[in-house]
Length: 278
Image (cartoon, rainbow, N blue to C red; front, side, top):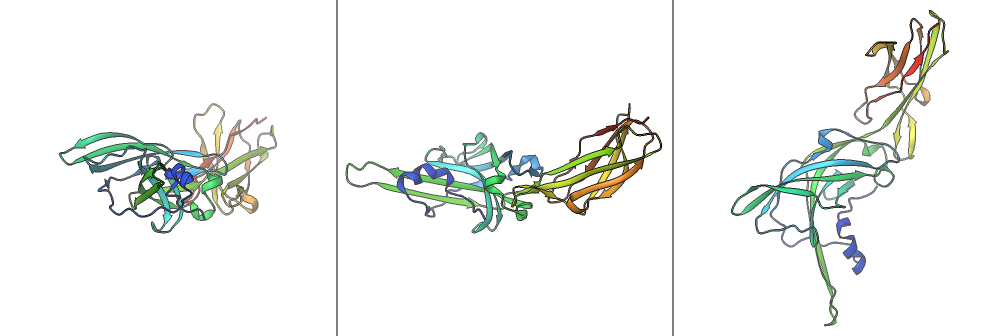
């Protein structure tokens, strides 16, 4: 599994020195955090290829004489699954500086409200079914100090980090795909229509969409000229995620399947299939 790359923000300095293992800070900065809100509190639905950009908001309080310049030090948000000390997987919003605005200032502290983005690339960051779950939000602080002046035959590099966990949660879900096809078209009034389809979902281990069997899916119908769909019947997905049922053709209109979603898989509604009834 991919581990939390807590040193990613300092990759340039690491590349210059050839070092890869940051040391813990001797003195942690006096930072406190408000709740982290990821994707406006909504689940993050991810497919197999496209990178998903997720908005993140948070607040933190720092000493008034302590500055974060995003050059020699950095503060960012992370999502992790598992323990903070040894996460099973991690996602970082560390590629760019957040936008922060001071909201409260005292003689000794400054509180800032911040917005940033977190990107989820399923091809690089999501490894399997275990990633479709509730993740924890945390905050990362890191700093570097580099002296590349070798005029005195001495150079130095130092870096460290702090991680705070349990600052919120975010749910990751697999994107679902849903199809529908009603036949025959056109159909004689009173005759039987067969409505088929399939339900699949993102499989991050296989990098493809695979069958989602045993799920309840609702067939809906909207008559020509109507403004809303009505439920017709419930169908259970079978082998290969296949859906099939029959209805009596009564009037012109559109059929579609809709899936309410599960804790691991996002809801989905198929495109509509219009049927002309003769």
